[in-house]
Amino acid sequence: MSALAEPQTDRTAAPRLAGVLETCLYADDLARTQAFYEDVMGLTPIHSDARMRAYDIGGRGVLLLFRRGESLRVIETPGGMIPPHDGAGPLHVAFSVAAEDLPAWERRLALHNVEIEARATWPRGGVSVYFRDPDGHLLELATPGLWRGY
Figure 1 (cartoon, rainbow, N blue to C red):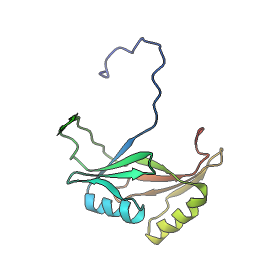
Figure 2: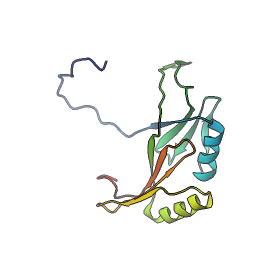
Figure 3: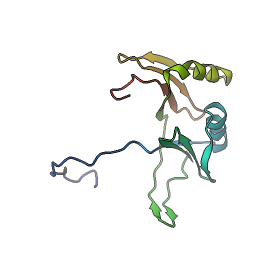
Figure 4: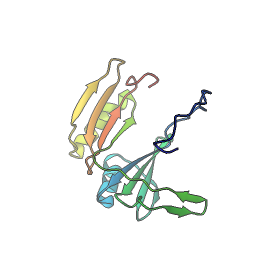
């Protein structure tokens, strides 16, 4: 559907979405960014090639790190094609963590000289800790109680 298309008039309920499967971030220096996500965040790649890395996040999602500009062309696969995409500027990803693990995460960030930029306590009881990856993307560690349903 193009941005100029007429709004859909079908008022039936949309089928249920089960979750967000993939989140993409874009890196200027993929090796530097890979080192951050593996050394600091403790992630293990589930796919790696010259243009991107993929990481399993808690068995519920995948973080894709693309070399900036490498996802701007159509990618042909045996099963079909992947349309182009990219992002610019500082993007944001929140990782869910157990409340009891947040202090250990804060110690780990300090151990790796990662500055905590901000901290927030939410009305539902959740806590968020904010910091940046090497490409300036804003990362968040969020405990339950941030949103309704989490």
